[in-house]
Image (cartoon, rainbow, N blue to C red; front, side):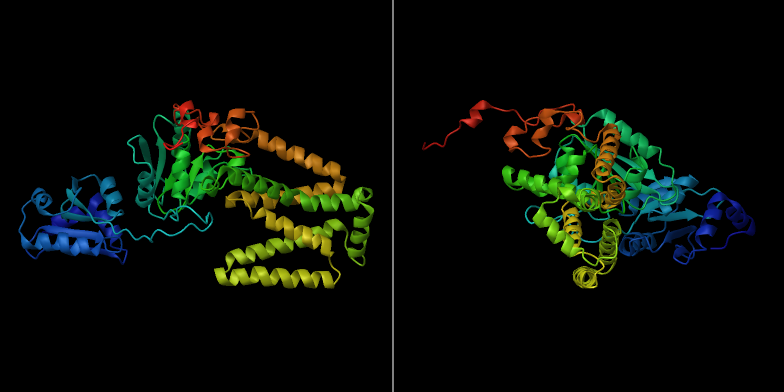
Length: 495
């Protein structure tokens, strides 16, 4: 069908014509006339459009009939959620979200937008950073709709509320805030929503970007929201009154408000009997304390307080350090940096190669350093135990903070001995006391002291003892279930 030069000139100079011309500069943009005698044209980005929908549902239907208006097309094409609009911003947005445009070449055309987005996603796999021996083996994937489905499957109630936003001036990332109405504190919800709306950045690739932008203290090494890849853990904290944040393209969720002790709680603790879960949680807390303090205590005692060491142990330490050319602080820093190098090399290499580097490198370098007289075998054991203890944290993000704060403790131990360790500990505690998670105390229930919340903090009491939700959440409905004294005395029929 021929068109006059005047009509084509008006079309090319219009905003819509400029949009089509801009898109045609890309190799994957497709534009063609529906039929030789048809006034309608079709345009789309073929790399983000489902070819099955495009050829079988749209093209095959449109070529079978002759249409006079777009309204007739809309009533015939077997695709849901089609819209008619002449708004350029809406057309631009929907075009980049996998819509097919059907239009006439005129100055201000009305377009028929046909949804045909091709969603590429991987299959649901097992968790990698939060693996558990027992319990569910599902983890989040990069599709926001799939992740919401995994949560709704576990909490099939209408009280789950989802607020969706578009964040990132270039990426236009879909971000969802999920909470349970009637349980979550509306103040916490409003705070998170306001902070997400205030994000002014060009790209939001992962929830880790959001975590850094909405945290109360962006300069703290401690994460103030939990980053989890487990749908079951996310569903569990939602029922406590917390809020989850998901982003399209991210395989993890942010949950908060949170506390420091929650970073030592593994979801597997709730899948085993309460006394074992409590013991394992205490072991993790002890291991992290050991990881932070063991090497600084070694440096402080050997530098300033060797009289504190028992005579038999002192003989062993003196013999192990005989011929070592470095002072304890330099010896400790060399070994700590070596461990960090091995850890980074193992994390950045492919899985099988990384495991080999970690094991072989640790054995070879450690043995060679002791035999060469560069370090003592006692310090090598201390540093190795310290590194091993730092891996016991169930949430990976907090292990990075533990790796970092060991070095200030080392320097304070060298400067002031045990007094320096105490001073550094006081600074760390003061920082944690000031820290907040969505405006809530980070050290709760230790500070402020809330004895009722201790039932699931340092230890985990049985489920029948956890009648109320945490006080920190300020839940609108604080009762989990009705406690009945008669249930405790229930007997079997034959008793």
